Image (cartoon, rainbow, N blue to C red):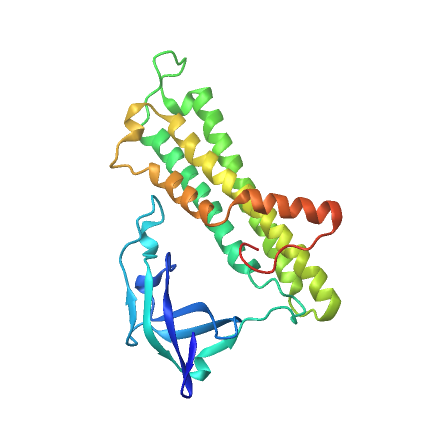
Length: 260
């Protein structure tokens, strides 16, 4: 971003602009001429804003998160905002967004449970070795659906716990706000780990409640794993776990940018 008269001009490109093809406004980050990172928001129909329908991930296809290319886009002074969180009482502004993504994973696990239970009731046939005449009576099918349910339950529980932690930051100022904000960010990070792993495992176990017919493309059951995997890759859980570990061992605060 460079100054131009009373405003600015922005050039650049953002791959994976979340929901970009549905949007009326685009918000992005840019470096100004002094090297500082600033935030700006412009309408998508402004000259020089190009939205590309090139989102080609294996999952989350309906988010329409294609590339946004900015070519000499004019930005007014009141459309630019400072991006310095260092002076905030609670600098962990990304916790809610990360909680939202964890909730998406929990929803995927819940959807896998719904599909597993419905398939067993309506379409599944017991394996030849089964002692049951109907899949709903097969003890191993019941065990599998029960495990999917447990994974979905765990994901939902940790999301609720994290939401309570984020809520506790509201209204606080000064040192209490910083302490609560750091704790909430770590809680959300831990939630992400469990929600991601729960969704991936639930999506895999879904296929264990039926035979070959459960893999029919028409059912689309593979979408659960693909969606969970794509969301998880936006927010690597190894980093979440490592940051949480550092916080519990040494009291080190989590990062204030990126995935927290």
